[in-house]
Length: 358
Image 1 (cartoon, one colour):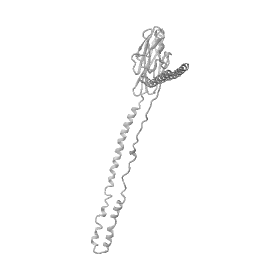
Image 2 (cartoon, one colour):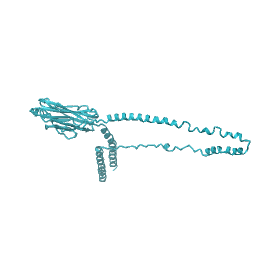
Image 3 (cartoon, helix red, strand yellow):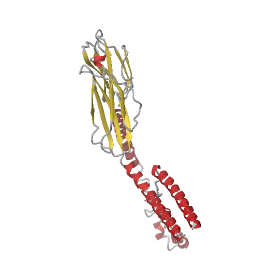
Image 4 (cartoon, helix red, strand yellow):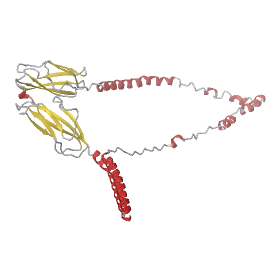
């Protein structure tokens, strides 16, 4: 009895050890994110018939030789004896028989060559006109389409965020003593035109300065500066102190003067848990676009309103949702999960059966 008990214990320990190994492998499979994709190379069938054409034209050897032999000078041999006989001298008059004037080769065909000489200049003139038209059309297509600003300089510090040609909205707070803002705006393309409006006669509260860049092709791009004129900075402070998304990390890292962020998620979520904290307690905020997220691109806006109820800041969160990655991960894990489950059940059943026999 003691031996049977020992063997049973040994078998159970071994089975538990194997089961533990399976659990570890199961956990490794469950956390793995496989990328295995099997690609079948495309087999291109070559057209062998394209290079197997044989020339069927054979030279007419022998035919030309045969014709040349038939057209030999047999008549000349017959005429020689005719010249020796006096009876045949009268009919020999055939020699001047109009065969010699068959020299019609130079007959008026040579001056006919003058006609194509007149056609040549007419043909050269026509393509010259089409070439000029093509040159004109190509010159219009080459007009610059660049309507970006290359640099933006203000005589007052505090522009947020720092200038970037791809950012079109900026914010600036000035004192009540400031009546205008001197702006130097340089286009990225020297052939573009820059127009500035609203930078003078600033009023208390919010003012809008527009900087429009017009490219050579006529394309325009507008940069906007929201200037708030006040003596109480806290009243117009609409900056955020903190912004985060629970369970996710966006990029770039949060800063109160950065207003655009990007986030990619691989989960089926209808909304995100966004945590917002303004710098001023009395400031308010509103989140727009955080409901019914769809697969692909989603835009979430966090609009912060300052204590005065006028000054505002807009933070944007560009969210890309991918459902396909989630489905691929689940389907790739299922075969491993099923296999490990079957092996675990088989090992436990075998261990129990062996222990009963002993």
